[in-house]
Amino acid sequence: MIYLWWVWMAAAVLLLVLEVLAPGFIFLGFAIGAALVGLWLLAGYAIAWVWLLLIFAVVSLIAWLVLRQVVGVRKGQIKLWDRDINED
Image (cartoon, rainbow, N blue to C red):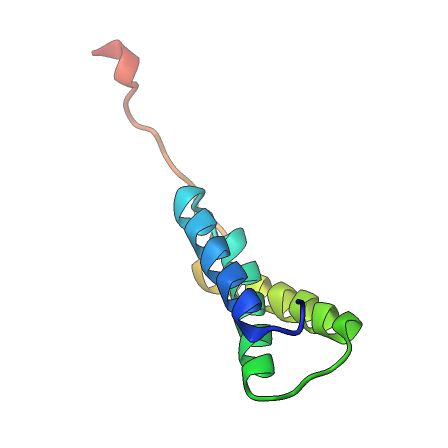
């Protein structure tokens, strides 16, 4: 079952739904990794399941790191509170 491309694509969609429910770019990297493995299998490149999981892990890590650089907290970015909502 791990060799079926649609299983990986379904996992990617499920991870995207989880990302919408719990935003923070946590599951988006995993969704990108699952989608890439699904596309890899759809293209006809069948390899051992261990390598599929390794590709998934590496691509997910790279995607997460890139997302953190692109949309993450910038250096020196702070939130200044100039008024307290409880004092009104």
